Length: 601
Ligand SMILES: [Zn+2]
Image (tube, rainbow, N blue to C red):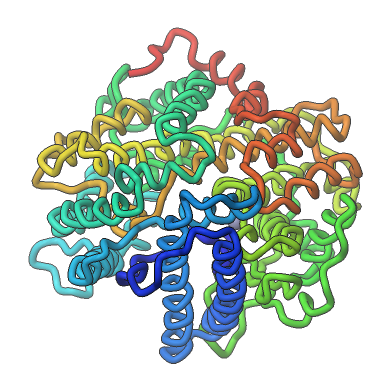
């Protein structure tokens, strides 16, 4: 996760602002003056937001929360204002650099408030109230007292661990009961946010979201379907295998050849199946090196673990982290105060005040996460030479993908190279390792498409409130191959049971990131001359891979993303075959297990 206010994507709908300013006079000088105001203001407000956010994250009190919320609102108000004003320069002749800044700005909003002040206020209120419904959401069985209600953490835990199908179905349906009160609000939210988007010249809010990818909204939708087509055979192999394993456990609760019941996949949204690993693991089990044991045996603490991560980047040719990183970061959970432990990476002054916030445990998982988070840190420092508007990743899939690309290089071979283990294990445990990550990353992909595929149809009017739920489940069946235990009519609003819908956070970026990280990894592994299977390749210590990575990171958002992709991979198109390559050994194994089983649904 990246924690950065400079990310333009963090935007709300605040007030009618465009009308407070005189229309631009149409000169290039006017556009330049506007952009220098934008860059200076955004940098200032972002830095203030980072300072307040950092304190709030590392010292949670009602006061720090209030201060952080205030700083964040100030930033969001400014970006909303700037995005609307940027749209007024569409016809003004400006240089290529300025045009790019205006375009990035104009596409920065995830929600555009209508100019009418009452409608703008209503829209802001609707989103706040839907977020509130989600945040307070609990499943209270009839007649139970309030303390017996289950919150999302408890329901998540039950779905992860419980194997009683009736209980799983009960809590799955229970969580989905939080959403129906959102339905009318969501329909009104769609109307109002579309109105705002149209005022900015977009066809609807969904088209506005898809306009930030340097191609037309239609081309972007097709692009996602093309990428999915490259991965669908791999997904089908996994789906078939998991369905068979679930049938061994749940018998006829699971059809032999139909969609899998959604409540049995170990996760509220069936977007991550890794909780099924114990049920699905290869016989004999994987013999993995226990990095956790090594870290504990050698007593390698949080700071030293982070030093390994830093050395990964310096081995690629990046400058070491600044001394302030070590002085100001939070590496361990403090004993005396509340902090947000969820790992995040910061660049407080948007230049070189890099920080890291993580409650590090001596585990292999945290060792990998450190590498991921540092990917964000090094990215933000690499693009610090750009104007503030461009201090962001090439498209919104890139930031997470870079972190994950680095994490993909944390291989046994890398652990040998840095002296943490003596000898890399043989290939006998590889299928288990690949299956474990596939249950998380590959199983996620179709869900990563469904969330926005549904919203694009809703925003465009193709799906109306009397079809919300039907359209949702049609997409989930088509892409994910899952279905609810019992038909879910329009009295439900199942999309609302996923945070990003009430919170209005676009979702396609997670799909892009999942695809891009493997494309990055394959290209860098090739640059590094790696000849082993991709899951055993590490780019550690390779100058050529480092050079490519650096060139891409330094661009920030200053160029259309295909340029950034080309600098790293030599390709201008996204390519999901890299992920298929990475999992090719697993696919061969799955297909062997699946012999004689019906595939698909
Ligand atoms: Zn991240």
